[in-house]
Length: 429
Image 1 (cartoon, helix red, strand yellow):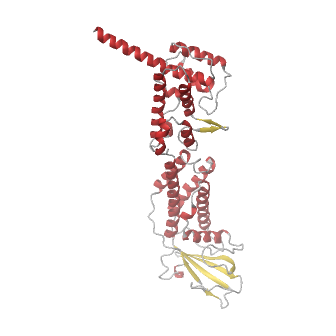
Image 2 (spheres, one colour):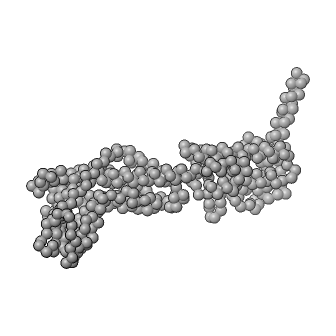
Image 3 (tube, helix red, strand yellow):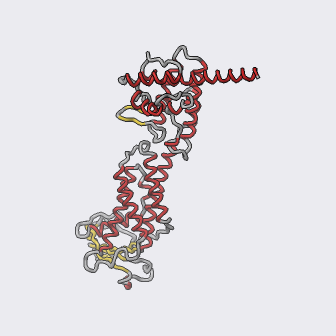
């Protein structure tokens, strides 16, 4: 006979509510961070179902008691509690392994000796009645078949336990037959027939150790997932060493490269078309710096407005406490909101400008105007509001750029006029 003792697992479990809350946070963070960066797709329904299993498993193992295998198998069939236990064990283990696979977590970091013993117990109970020729724990390779023998409960069969074993709640017998004539020597105590044609192994279990082992495994998985998400959250940050270059040079191409694989920042790819509000700002920046006839003060003001917004966006992007929806907007309508005029029907124009009139303005592509009437109406109303004409002899993107540049130009003009009037009033006074 070989005697196997389930290890004594010392673990002070955190409250069920705390672990469940952390699991909920992980599922939420999974949506916010790391789906693209971790290289793993998000299977919303699959992950929701798996997390539901994990919640149920957490509750089950928290409430595990010393009768978790029932009254034994005197009838030849394991108690229904034993089936319930091994199935719940298997569900939880499979769930953790599958989540590690789709979240690309290192499962080996939470593998334990207890895993092998519990998996063997599950194999013996579920597959009793068919040939079992491989168990994970112990050296049983010389035996062609291993079967579940008896399950003894200490409460019902106290005499089966001596003083040393008295802390255990169950003794599970494993009966095995030899596979070949070559038997490996072992230092473990075995009770066999003279030629070692068969062997009997007694496994001793204490419910507290089993309970602690499973809660520790679930908790270890939670920590592993949290560590990975924290790592992904950190690599979501933009490199500080590039901030000066990107801001001072208005390097939108580099900023776009940094953002396109991140969850924050508003960069999306739809049907192979790259969408990001920064592309609109880049078009304005290129327009104002490449056109002749634009006043240098206007160029300077437009560039300053854009750089200030890029700097603010960059800094707040790296602040972990600021969510994506709270980041400074790179939409030109927001960036230049203090300069654009009040246009008749402005609310509808704000909705239509980048949706119907110039839908590709905030993409990496150039727009082609097939909405002539809408564009003409916008330029007419915007020109009236500005008090100057917007140049229609341009591409649709350039018309939009001209609108924002002219808005800054006219606002500076008004500011200078007000300043002159103020100085004149002071002189007269």
